[in-house]
Structure formats: structure tokens, C-alpha cells
Length: 195
Image 1 (cartoon, rainbow, N blue to C red):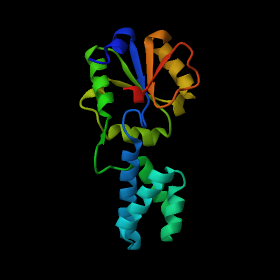
Image 2 (image 1 turned 180 degrees about the vertical axis):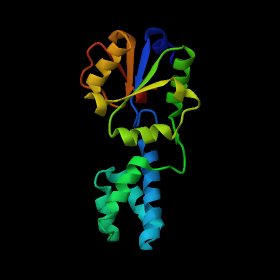
Image 3 (image 1 turned 90 degrees about the horizontal axis):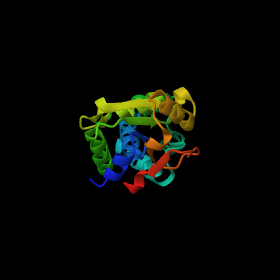
């Protein structure tokens, strides 16, 4: 019941996705595993070496240019970028994506209080929907309303639209995210790290 203060004072809860509900590395590292398996089959290279390189590169430098770095290291033909990009968007993961335990507890308490839960998702809608579908929601998925900022404008514009569409007051909304968004006008923000 440690989330009760938020639940008592707010009428709606808006969550981000990556590194808010779950660790984004759990998705990325599984995509790299699948890509390495594909390359092993197509190029007869050791998948284990590719996975190790991609994982270490990702943990050190992040996801940017990871295909280019991997292709250079293992002399992969450029044609494989298509397969890599498709996997990024549509990968069927070997393992479900698990929510952070404190976030799952908070979501359960919000649901038990009968209050609405929204996901406001940045990034490529196809990829982000693929992630959402592969999460272990523990039955909460039927109580979520999802908005993609790429379809409606910026994060802030989508948040404003959400508030108006659902007839909410800004002071009654709590946004749970990784980093503070720009327009904090009358909408309270809670860093997921505080959960």
C-alpha cells in the first residue's frame, strides 16, 4: 500500500514504456540474439561471438549504429541491415518482457482502485506495439489505453489530447516516466526511479 498517497490524490495515471515499465535492454539483447542466430545460419559465423560483441557494444555504447559496428567487425554484407531492422520492429522474442516489480505492484494497486491507466509511448509505433504485445502483463493488459505520440504529435501534445479526450483535469493526472518532459504545466511527474 505504499503507493496509496498517489492513488488517493490522482484520478488517472500515464506511464511511459521503455525503461519505465520494463528494462529496454531486455528487448534489445533478445533481438541481438535472434539476429546472431540468423547470421550464423546465413553466413556460417559463430553466433556466440556475434552475440557477445553486440551485447558488450550495447551495454557500453547503446543501440546507436550497432548494426554498422557489428557488420564492420564480422565483415557482414550490408544487405543484412534489412533483416536487422525487421527484427527490431517485429521480433518474436524467446522470452516475455517482464515489468519492473515495483511498477507492476503500482499498476495492480491502481487497477484495484478502479482508476484508468494509460500508456503514452514514444518511438516507432510498430516496434513499440510489438514490445507491448510481448510483455507479461499479469492480466492488466485489458485495462490499458495506449497512445503513440508518433501518431498524434509530441509527447506533450499527446498528453494534452489524452487529458481532453478523457475529460480529466491536469492536476488529477500523474505521469510516470524516465525523464521529465518539457511541459510540466499543472501535470505532476513522478520518476520511475522513485517507485
